[in-house]
Amino acid sequence: MNTAFFIVGPTASGKSQIAADLAERCGGEVISADALQIYRGLPLLTAQPNETLLSQAPHHLLAAFPLTEEMSAAKFRELALHALAEIYARGKRVFVVGGSGLYLKALTHGLAPLPPVDQLLREELNGLSLDELQEQLTALDPLGAATIDRRNKRRIVRALEICAQTNAPASAQRKEWKSEATSARGVFVFRDRAELNTRIDRRVEEMFRGGVVEEVAAIKQLGATAAKTLGLREIQRLLAGEISEAECISTIQQATRRYAKRQLTWFRRQTNFEPLNLSLLKDHEAAVDWILQKAERSFAPAE
Image (tube, rainbow, N blue to C red; front, side, top):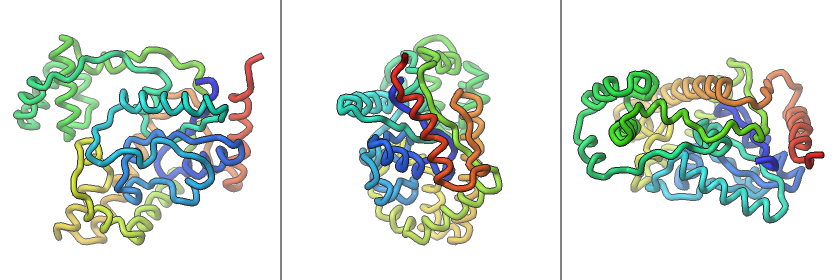
């Protein structure tokens, strides 16, 4: 990881623009660490970098898989390591950018081995109701039950599979990262809450002006991972006539603000990357210059 520089932070903070500018100035390349931008078919809803940004430098793991493909932290790590190896072989510098905390930590720390999927056990668990699954998880793994998204049946089923196959709480095993990743270097970018919320609200409005409703309407099939895309359910309700466009926009804005808050909490607790409040800098160029100085030190060979 010594020759990769990480740019992490919440949604709408401006990470993609910073990464593209840095890569362009260094003749480097960008690897996206976003759990949903990895899919093609929802560029507006997942806020993928536009053509202008993509033209500044080569980007990897963006719009790379169909919406039906299942994705996980382990699979992302494998794909990212392959991309890193190819970029290193070309002698290029690498900027890893994203806001998917688990994917980033899987790349920087590695993952402890977990049992493979037992299809019979999965079918049995999928046959239970969400309430029944939550009750089982609370009994087997109280800590995990308290922290997991209790509406996400897929995650609860996987946690129960791990409990059943290892006779140990899934929450304890998920904390067993392979290393402390002391070699990973990067910055954690964020903005003052009011400014970030304004940027989030504006982005959602721009998505609707850009045709995100038509984008969602064109979807034919979705896998379980892509189905978790923020805002997808709300737009599907809009298409079904269950809510108005104004209600849809407002709900997505609120959900995105909550998501950004969770991302901020994750990065403050889970990384030792140097924090940078972009709201305190005079402009975008000042941010790029500041981060570039940090990156240059990271890329410099050890003496």
